[in-house]
Image (cartoon, rainbow, N blue to C red; front, side, top):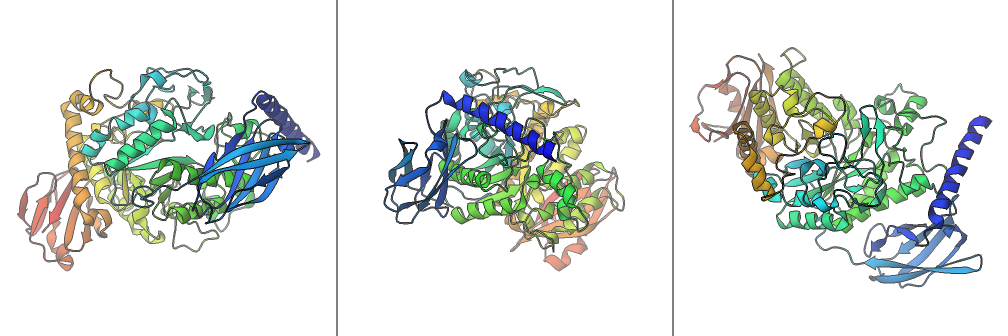
Amino acid sequence: MIAMHTKKLLQFTFTLILGISLYNANAQTKVYPGHWWTGMQWNKVQLMLHEANIGQYANAKVDYAGVSLAGVTTAQSPNYLFVNLDISPAAAAGVMQIQLTGNGKTKTISYELKPRRKGNGTAFAQGVRSEDFVYLIMPDRFANGDPSNDKLAGYKDQVCDKNDPNMRHGGDIQGVTQHLDYLQGLGVTSVWMCPVMENDMPVQQEAAGPISGYHGYWITNHYEVDKRHGGNAAYKQLVEAAHSRGMKIIQDGVYNHVGNEHFLFRDQPFADMFNNWPAYTPSNHREESLFSPYSNSADKKVMLDGWFVQHLPDLNLANPFMANFMIQNVLWCTEEFGIDGWRIDTYKYCYEPFLNNVNDALLADFPQLTIFGEAWSKTVAGSAYFARNNMDVAFKHNCPGVTDFPMQAGMLSAINQNYSWEGGANKLMMNLSEDFLYKNPLDNCIFLDNHDMDRFVTMVGGNMQKYKMGIGLLMTLRGIPQLYYGTELFMQNDQVNGDGKKRNDFPGGFADKGKPGDRTMAMLNDQQRETFQYTQKLAQFRKISKALQVGNTITFLPKDGVFTYLRQHGNESVLVILNQSDKAQSFATGMLKPYGAMTSARNIISQQTTPLGNEITLPPQSITILSLQ
């Protein structure tokens, strides 16, 4: 134990010396957050000051109406100072001077309070709900709107190579902005981008070989959008452009870890800001250790405190300084950029009280905001545990929704798996039947694929009928539907090691001439045009269908591979029938009588309206979507 303690102390001392050397040459004080706002519910703001030897200024003074000093804390590293401000509702916007003194020296920091944005909950922070249709984009692989920022001096990664699936390709935020016409025409209402904050990391060695931080999950600065994506200005322009069209933006946050080039890791304020181990210890990835009545503390610790990979230090969110830094950052980003919702990466690996605290803070200042956490679980109970739920468990999470992996598995089973007592369509039915575990399953984000798995079209073997079955399920089941970029264009990936090929370039996004959206459409072959139009028809219908957006769901037990459910809201009824078998089947409409006197049916795809007879004939491997009149 003594040897272990000595080793940790030596590691911290080395980091401390490194931090001093890094910042001796930089006389400018870095302040996090860089500014705040009047009228925020979060009005006890902890400023983190970072500069060589700033810890010598142990005393502070603030003379600004409505703002009082609540204390100053020095850190173990001399390069940090924490200044706590209490901002009353009476404080007006303006610039205050924070006077620091110590060792016979005086230093003054200017700090601005800004007026809050207008339209909280209506013009921004609107929330993303089951009425929406989300489109997931990895900016580096979507479209290159500004080739001049493909390589920028000063970044540790200077590789931009479209021929290497594991390196940066040059896509950026301007490329997303240029495609808003295309996305809106598809029926998209909300854009979720993988993290856009700075990833100033050198190329790293992972199991799949050398890989860069093109994906955005190796954050090194929480307050700066990566300049290779266009910086803060490009992000603000995208948000404004989306809002002007009635569209929304979801930000992807990462609480669990940072890149090992993050200044907080390179120069650690306190020795326990990160979950350090005597030797590299990865997470066991077993969320069961958190909620099982039989689990042990050692397994739980490895689940929460174990690292993802060696170059992603795991944050100790039980440390109050780290917790404040992260909470204030998500509040700052929401107000500064005007985003509408958050998707939180690696949610299930984070210190649980922190998660509830950050959600409470977000919803106190932005009541209409929505949050869904990535909780990759194989079971409905495991997924529901991380959301608001109806379960009697030791810890009660308060996240409104999750990325619904059990629903994704159920949809794939209904499409790909042979029909059986527990497989195929029955798997989907069984997962839906456990929705009683969630407070509101409509707040879950449902999907067929994402950036961490094979593309949906690859998973169904490029089968067009199965593709249409999947899109039909996605657009008609409960929850917030999310489409991974390019799925509407039948994009597939090669079966290769690593994730690079699953994140292939969007068609038309990297060409030189022409309007990006038009360029994409002009490149389509007949197969891609068919899948685009099929997705578009369902997305546009869903926009006007309250039954699909917020309606009740009534399921009928699967029989011979046929799974039927009814979505109803008011006088509107939408009937969905999935036939996963390889032969024609029929559905007896008499089963619908208890749910309304419906006499005709309009096929959403063909737009044909026919009388509702005693039976509906179902082609093999098909999905039939009918608006009942």
